[in-house]
Length: 251
Image 1 (cartoon, rainbow, N blue to C red):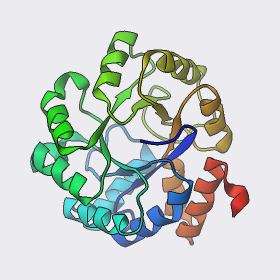
Image 2 (image 1 turned 45 degrees about the vertical axis):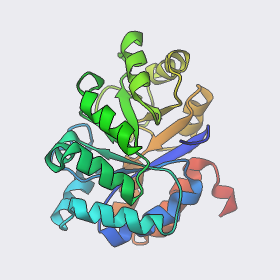
Image 3 (image 1 turned 90 degrees about the vertical axis):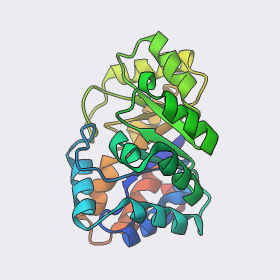
Image 4 (image 1 turned 180 degrees about the horizontal axis):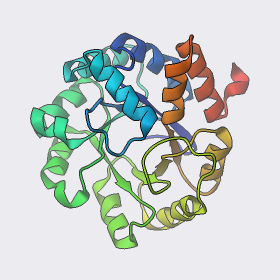
């Protein structure tokens, strides 16, 4: 799904508007291995303050699932960069698993991560995802034992998403040593590529995780904060993603 040493930027769809999200996606795609697009949800329990607030802003501004599919279709008119959706299970269940995955694929999504869907309860979801041709991504935590990590790897057809720390998303000054130990262990256990997320906000953290063996690194909250505080968010976001990717010298 992506080349090794890739940056995987996360953005929240519809924050602050669908039109702006499209501008953001097009501004960062050249520095991204995969783009992760979050679907706004009213109870994003795995997310920290920055991403929670982005969900609330999008919902307050009237974001609907139809807006997501419209955004995907328009993005695909301009870009072929791999894109995965990040969501909670409720919107998928309420829409209907087959209808949701089928429409997401038809509109241009390549894969999906359902944050609160454990592998042990994902049988129907996995069957339909395979039939609809959409790749699956599952989460693993630092305390996930090897046996369960193998199950997560087997269920993942896109990549395995390693959570770097205990807690919710959000930038941290330092990443715990357990994050790097987890990457090295996951690389021994998993056949899929592994990407690490949660807590990453600076280039040196990205480099350290890649040097530990990660194939990709996800950055979300730091980008959401750029969007929320900048007077020129498109350009500032592009510069930040270029910096995180190690390509800032081309700007």
